Length: 245
Image (cartoon, rainbow, N blue to C red; front, side, top):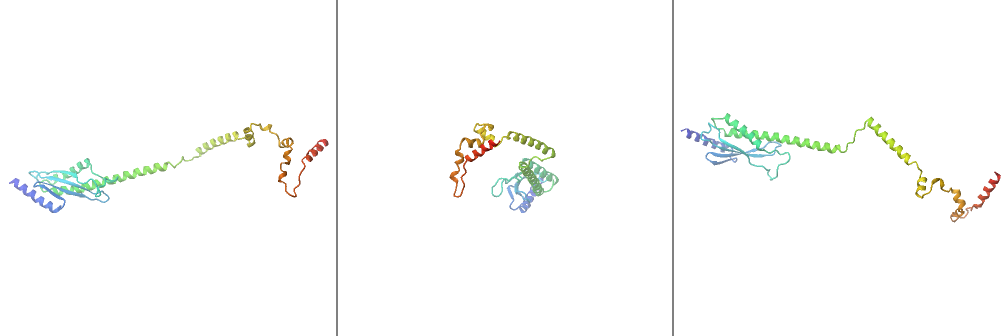
C-alpha cells in the first residue's frame, strides 16, 4: 500500500508540473523527467538550465535524485560569450545544487519539485547578476588603467622651484661653453677654411696697391653722366700728404 501511495503522489505531481511547464517539461519515464528553466534577468546574458529529476521509491518522504546542467552555452546567433557575459562554471553548479538540496530538505514529506525549480531559477538569476556586475567592474577598472597609462605618456615631470634652478644652472653652463667655443668670428672661420691666419691677410689698401686693375674693374658699369675717377690722383695726394708731414 505504501508503494501505491508514493506512486500516486508522484503521478499527481507530474501532472501538475506538466500544466505549469507545458513546453519546458520533458518526461523520460514514469519516474524520470526534466524541466528547462530559462534565466532572464535585466542586463544579464540569458541562459537555460535543465533540472533533471528521478523519483526515489519513497518520494516525497525522501529527496529525489536530481542534477543541474547548462542547456545553452551560446546566444541565439551562435556567438561565443562577450567579455562581460557571465557564464556558469562547475563551482556555480555546485553552489546552485546546494541551495536546491536545502529547499528539498525543508519540503520533505510533500511534493517538492516545483519549489526546487523555483529556488534554482531565483538563485541562478541572482548569481548571474552578481557575476555580470563583477565582470563589468573589472572591465571598467582595466579600461581606466589603460587610459591612465596612455595619458601618462604625455605628462612630463612637474616643475618645481628647485628643479627649475637646477635646470637653469645647467643651461647657463652649457650656454657659456657654447659662447666660449663660438667666440671666433665668421672671418676667423673663413680664414681657417682657406688656411690663412687672420692677422696675415692683406688689407684692402694692400690689395688695391698690388693690383691697380681693381680700380678700373668697375668702369664697365659707368653710364652717361657718371664721372670716372683717376686712381693715380690718390697716390699723388698721398705723396703730398707724406711730404707735408
